[in-house]
Length: 96
Length: 202
Figure 1 (cartoon, helix red, strand yellow):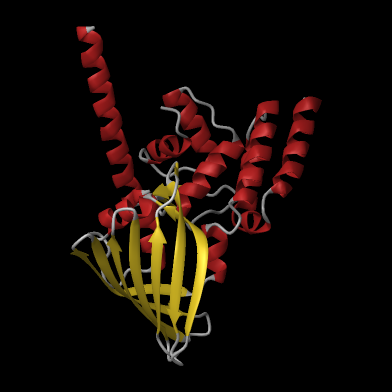
Figure 2 (cartoon, each protein chain N blue to C red):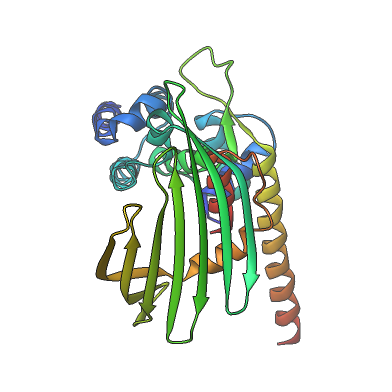
């Protein structure tokens, strides 16, 4: 899974994070390093779609984000689709 | 160390390539991320590519929120008719000054195989309503688009008729999306909510 928007959503599913924390988290759980340009491209798209939103409590320049209800639902849908592909692929490999 | 410092300096400079509206919204936090990150040359390329992508999307939602009036869907009904559909909607526009305009429309489209007929009846605020009748001949399909030849008759409120012929590109996915959306759209939805539905469906 290397879609930056899904990686950001999956990172925020574990708790609110700012950009750098997302970058470190994504590298840890997915082995993918999202550069700042790619990460903020994904953040911009996700905020436009209403799937994440900025938290107001930012004291410094680092802006934390949280997953919205729509974002959680979208992530669940995407993960269940991916799960279906994984299950089908494994079943077919077994019979190949 | 000196090389890393020069990459950070270059990244901050490249960040200025993003559109002004984007920088106004994300510039401060993006600069913080650039400061926190041990940047590679590939990251600098990513920042440049990101700025170009944002420029191509300029006029996207981050800019629209500041400039567009509030749009609210008051009512919408979509019905299947033989070989087509009917769509009725009432949409309210509120400007930043608080002025409201009601736009009501009725549309019926009938598919005739190689061609189609569409009737559009629209009224905006206190302006006289107008009716448009479009006769379209389906043309070549290229990906998700089809190039059609159309003839449009505009029936003006003063009794005159204006005829226009043109070549138009029709987005083929529109009907499929409309079909899936019609069960999800409801009264009172704002433009932002409709936009999110649309993006989630497309």
